[in-house]
Length: 328
Image 1 (cartoon, rainbow, N blue to C red):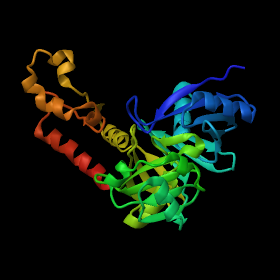
Image 2: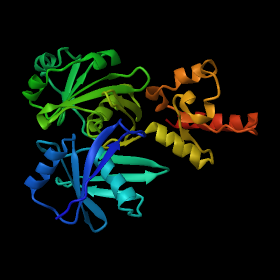
Image 3: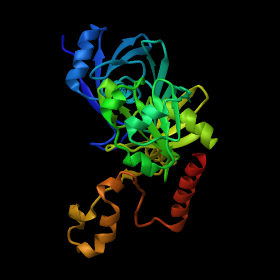
Image 4: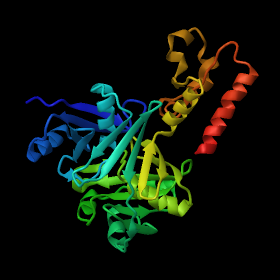
């Protein structure tokens, strides 16, 4: 039997970033050992398998070494495969998990919106062991499925170099570290060597714990998060008490503007490399080239520019962007 296999980068709008997941659509369930071996062969943080069941899809997730009870980015990747590769004409995809949780992904305005259960973390007293494994003592420690270690600032999160062997010995599926962000509500990283994932690039399920915590601390329901791994990813999250909703802020802004007849494009980097600009001197383009480095251009949208773009049209676009910001 041939099994289709797709690889999808989730939580990103450009290649070589976000979190890659493997997705295998099945006609019927196969042996658990076979799924585990496929996940091990793929050697990605997770491989998703799903089977269509009437009006929903039954889904399971495997890391290279174990099956998971919940996983965010391979669910998002599965929704993309269902819509874009299998061409299923549906707006809301319902997934049913092995433990009978119901998850959904809505596709609207080029935006994937995931609705996941929240997992309120409880206070934990294992600070000494966590500090030993991370090389730095958190100010607070919580847990649900995973440990949630809270630090004071983003720089601490960036600089932590954990001891993976010591993390493996802890009594948690994974260890999440988090702190207030410099430009977002909170940042995080996620370590799961026990599951064969030393550091997960972007972890949807981790935000099932992160969002309830930060919603309580910051006293707000709508949060912008950044998982600051090497590949990284930004998430827009809404806390609906027992549910957590994730999406991409930049994609959401693009969809909002499109709804108001304003087309946007991803921002080009390094204008001097584009044929149309090659006749111009480097000095004329040095400011744009400095600003639009690849690492920065993914954070930007290109807005309309044309000859008859008068002040009224510019004001209209600016008003829409401010309105979007107010909604956040």
